[in-house]
Length: 572
Figure 1: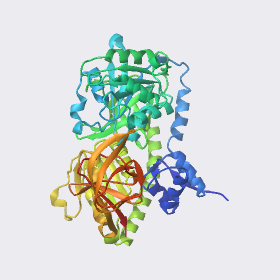
Figure 2 (figure 1 turned 30 degrees about the vertical axis):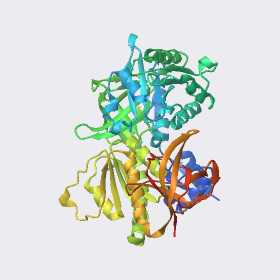
Figure 3 (figure 1 turned 90 degrees about the horizontal axis):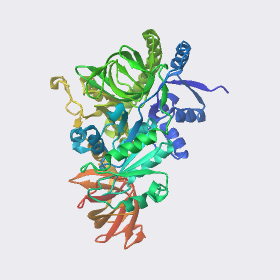
Figure 4 (figure 1 turned 120 degrees about the vertical axis):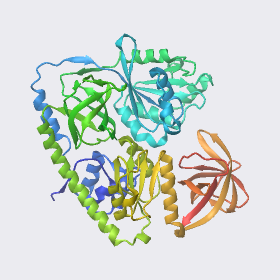
């Protein structure tokens, strides 16, 4: 039997794919679970997964994203009879756990103060910087956020890097994101250099080496293959040595690239500037990029009007391995997408029109189905949360959606886009009964235009504030369907075997391992999680009764404080 064909341009969510295939999204979720994947309706599926799922359900997927571009590139490349190779700048990802000193290290090298501009001194965006060293040597550093929420961004940076520089605080040692960074770098076969930071505060390096050896990372002076260097940004110690190690390592890597190739590279980030328009940060990997080139990424394209380096200086030419901001795109491309340069604007426009038509058909179909569902369901009985997300830069979307996907809450993301909150967002929120969440953007809706005061609009600066609002919104929606089974209070916190253990005392009812828990602070829910284990005097138990003390380990991570309240509950 011939399979039905569905045309898809880009990676889409489970919810969208279920609409295209006209099936319940639980069918797709179950297929993913059989593959060992933890997903929900907002999980974005890549092309390989989409093809596998569609094939399982009797459909064939046709992708129309880059085939035409590739054919055109081959045709133009035939005109070049001579290959010219140059050595490009090495690309180094700085990765590791939050607050281990990654951005401070980069600040020292660049003599800048990036960290002071970050909200709450937390890096929430990907940064990429070209550093000029002596003898005209250049290095390109990618600075990644260390918080758990930014896994997608860290994976993108690792995929486009030549070397992974993993920073480990000598105070805290090897932690969760340290291990994740090492495993991700090894999976991409990246050479690894370890920087042991903050040695002015703690110089017990043997403890770090032992922790690393426990995860099969043996440093060079212990007979292993991994280079390491003690550093202190405060004292300026070890910085030159670690740079020297990076440069020596790059001599062993083939970094030559053909500059007669048509330009290509990666989109790092993008945002809207009210004076300049769309600003797109790119990393050039092949060819020489020039002002006036025609560029395309996904459905967005344009003629490059300006090339701006990190010092805000206009330049005309970019060489491989370097990152710049460009002005000229007609929209905001997606972080991690490829870009290419073609010779003729006419060819780019033809490709874009084909892609846009596919996407418009998809979006119209989704909106029609959502609108019908919204009309059919009594809003008062609908416990799903519909949201509109407006963010400052494109890679913020990756982190926010990834964090939302971890919640055990039914959330429909009706719209997600870079830019300020506008009147069109308000109208969409009215139609689909949404809350509007802005992340580091402005609300430019004229208050006189708003006639529905029940539309909730939030302007937030930290991703964890978004999560708290969604958790509390879900709690308010489902209050009548939840029965509280027990309450406890956090009276002590300690870490054992890299796990946070909460010392608690039961106030009311019982705390049972089988029930979900809510952690509450100042009458607001900060986390919903499953319980991993309950212990009384090192003995594992399944329940604890009133007035008894116990140790608790939960599945999800959050900043837990003494006096936080723990509630166990079940749905009625």
